[in-house]
Amino acid sequence: MNQDNNSVNASSGEQADAQPAAPGEAEGATTPVLSAEPAAPTLAAELAAPTVSRAYRCQCERPVFLRNSECLACHTPLGYVIERLGVVPLAPAEGGGAQPDTFTVFGDPHGKTYRRCVNFLTPAGCNWMVPAAREGEQLPPDTHGLAPGYCLACSVTRTIPDLSVEGNGELWLKLETAKRRLISQLLALGLPVVSRHADAVHGLAFDFLSNTPGGPHVMTGHQDGVITLNAEEAEDAVRERIRAEMREPYRTLLGHFRHEIGHYYWDLLVQPTQWIDDFRALFGDERADYAAALQTHYEQGPPPDWADRFVSSYASTHPWEDWAETWAHYLHMADTADTAMSFGVDATNVELTSDLFTLDDLWQPDDPDAGSFLDFVNGWVLLTNVLNELSRSMGQPDYYPFVMPRAAVGKLQFIHRVVTQQRPGDAPSMVMAADIEPEPTQEQEPGSESPAQPEPQPQASS
Image (cartoon, rainbow, N blue to C red; front, side):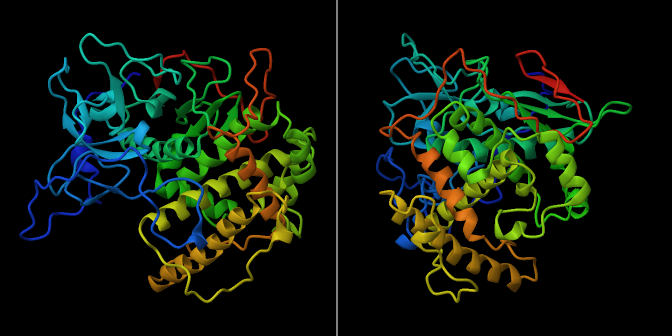
């Protein structure tokens, strides 16, 4: 990965969320060994979210956050460890053949050892940890296929913005921060995250490209496992201008990532599996002409009744887009509910502006998991009413500017079923046979070109 090494330390510029120590509180206090299990959620069962806690704590018991690499209260180093599915305090590895610049999880000196990701000291400011072997030990085969020295989240980045261009370092940081949150959620959900280093055919890769004078406009899209994002979308003013022009209720980098990764997982988890028939019954036949459907959408707009059938107007374009928009919505719901639960947000005493959903609204009301999924969806309704009121109290637009149609709830349950069957212990539904080529998801707008295929190693792009 070609990067400018301008020594931007991730532990300095992006720790604003960490809380300082209270007056008179000892900064070096320790706690017992941290459990490998995620912390239990703190909110009532009405918000039964499907993944893990988003609340992390340092060894000094101060809250820390997903992007932190140092606790500002006690200066303990922090890092995201995949085995713990979260940010944990670290301690320098000692004895037993420990190598320089290696760490263990705080309180577990004889446990696994880790190094910082190479991108820790680049503008990307990565705080993820990379497995490191003690002297005389060998690491087990890496099923994810990490690039040498890089964590999983950085290993799936194939092309980065040209860091010789002023401002691109900041854009790269914003892109990687959003992507790290995405990857952390995918891992928590038990979804396969495999780089192209491990699987050149089905592996995941991200190209962050920029427009060049006289060149074709870079289109955000997905094709054959490669997700292309226009780096200009990381510029807040540019993204807001596009949002207004497109008449979208919101537009975020994380939303782009979640939408495009939906196309990737459709190719892996739906198209070559037994789910395809149910998909077509719920979302429609994806074999319909995509280019023609996209042109119709941009020329004529969505159908008048789209709000009764889809999570967004763009979802009405084509079954592929209905899937990707609903998939992104599911990830939004799951992560927001997990975060609310983690921090004890109470949404149970709120006046509702809409009715709750019932089992009759589900795709499979008799499924054994139907009740807990319904709790999750109705908990989301309660939570978004609270979040909207909080936004209004600050004079801001609604946090959740949607009214979820009942028809979309069945589609969300379908996605929930696909996702939960990827977890260990559930019946496998993914086909990864080498002789199966997923159909390309042509997500570019009319007139755009397919993303170029750079060399396998990440490289700079202007």
